[in-house]
Amino acid sequence: PKLADGKKGMGDKVPPDSTLEFEVEVLNACQPIEKETLQETDSNVTPKESDYVRINMVVKAQDGTVRDGYFEKRPLEFYMKDHTGKSEPTGKWKPGNIIKKCVENMRLHEKAKFVIKEEVSDKHGNKPFWGTGAMVLELTLNTIGADEDVTGDQGVMKHRVSEGEGY
Image (cartoon, rainbow, N blue to C red; front, side, top):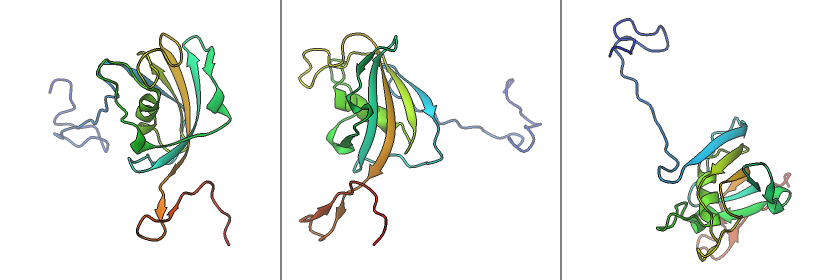
């Protein structure tokens, strides 16, 4: 109360005697993931669990050395439902899970940099996937899409590879 605007309020922004509520999203409390937006977007579209996404990605060491640039020019496409977006009970991350966790916090056409403090292991959890130590993922979320059931019985599914230009 001593720090709030109380009876006088704050003009048109905060009415007098109002209660302010803040929505805070903790990406990960145990293994911090820091996000920095590199390119803003006007879109409010975020991926849902049933969507597929197409991203470009560069993995770097914290000093800027590129560890993996394969998907910088070639898009990586995956279904959100195929990954948990959570670390393993051991505290280690698998590549697909850490990428999903980052993409969940992005909007369409946004480019962001994520600093990953914890080790990312191979799919078996045996050895480091992109090397040891903290790393930086630079992601661009290019496409968010959903498969369309053409026949109604999931016999024929339509997966859009690129936008058409009409008939």
